[in-house]
Length: 220
Image (tube, rainbow, N blue to C red):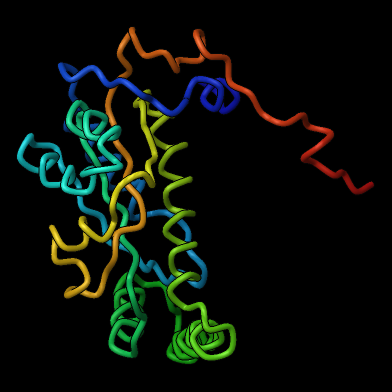
C-alpha cells in the first residue's frame, strides 16, 4: 500500500478477531517502531509494557474497571497490547546514561560535539523544568509523538490498532509498580486484526475529516 492507501485503510478498531495473532517477524518490527520514534533532543522519555499472553492482557484490564469497562474486551481480544509510559523525571543520571548510549552507538565524532549536545539537551529540559514548569507534560508529548508514529507504522504492516486513553492509568501504574520505577502510564494501544462484524470499519462507517481548505493554510 502507498501512504494514502494506508491512512485510509487504518481506523480505530473496535472489534478484534481473537483467533488471529501477530507473527514473530511482525512483532520484532513493532518493537523497532517503538524504539526508533523521534523525540525532542532525542530524549526518549518512555518505557513500553507489551502483553501478548492472556495473563498479561488480563493484568492490563486492571485499568478497565468501573467506568472504563467498555474497553475491557478490546484489550482481551487483541493479539498484543502496548502500554505507553512516560518518565516522571529526566534527572542527571538519566541524561548521562542517554549520552553514553549515544556515544557507544557512534553518534558523536568527538568529545566537543558530545558535550555540546549534552549541554543543549539539558538546556531544553531545564527550560521545561524551571521556567515553563511542565517537564512531565513535555515528556508526555514525546510519548504521544511515539504513539502517532507507531499507529502509522503498524498500519503499514497491515496490523489494526486502537489507541485508548479510556483506562484508569493510576490503576495501571499500581499494577505494574510504574511510579516506583520512575514512570507513569499515559495511553494504551491494542493491536491485532479486525473482525468482520466491527461496525467501525471504513466500509461501514466512512472516515470523516475536516476539509483541506479548513485545516491547511498554503503560503505562496
